[in-house]
Amino acid sequence: SQKIEQNSEALNIQEGKTATLTCNYTNYSPAYLQWYRQDPGRGPVFLLLIRENEKEKRKERLKVTFDTTLKQSLFHITASQPADSATYLCALDAGGYQKVTFGTGTKLQVIP
Amino acid sequence: DVKVTQSSRYLVKRTGEKVFLECVQDMDHENMFWYRQDPGLGLRLIYFSYDVKMKEKGDIPEGYSVSREKKERFSLILESASTNQTSMYLCASIQTGRETQYFGPGTRLLVL
Image 1: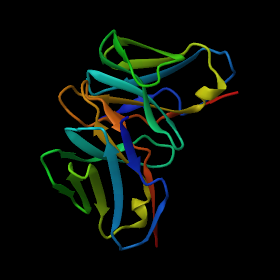
Image 2: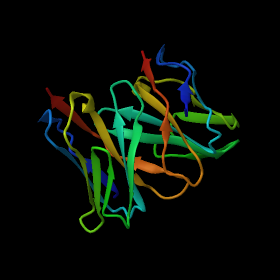
Image 3: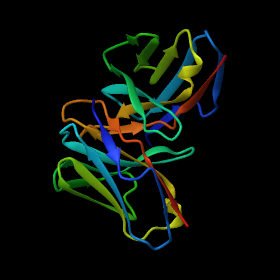
Image 4: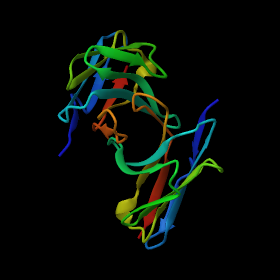
């Protein structure tokens, strides 16, 4: 069956360090993968999209990699700040009608 | 600025009541989605609509119905609310041909 795995354990890192979050998937062949940020009690907000033919994408302090052989995406936040504390969700193209399937998210806590 | 609004942020209902959750988007998007989000389970797709009066079942449609009479409005209906429908409900919209979903703020529903 299709599965998306994100580290369910919260990730605590020191301010200024690089946070790395992982998204693994099985039995998908996504055309693209997305990362969203979700704050408590709020809806997810889109951050980055990476396509199957792209290895890496950057946006300011954010970097996403996509390895279709390993079936894995890594999401990096460099020079992390307490304001980066949130839950980060990965989402895979589920095929048709712009549907995506979401992972359960990883909660990031950046400690001052 | 794009906007998806949901009729209520918090809702408390009794078992057996009929519940209406409304979602409105101002971006002229063709596609709209209803998800529920539960701890450890992530976002799960209930229903989606790719056009006015069109609807498709998502992964967990049981106990729910939807209505899309106007392009900007997508309603989720719980015909007879049950305690296992206590959850966070999120609406999203997306333009055909694009990949980014725009989410509303969510409705936290408690069924007693």
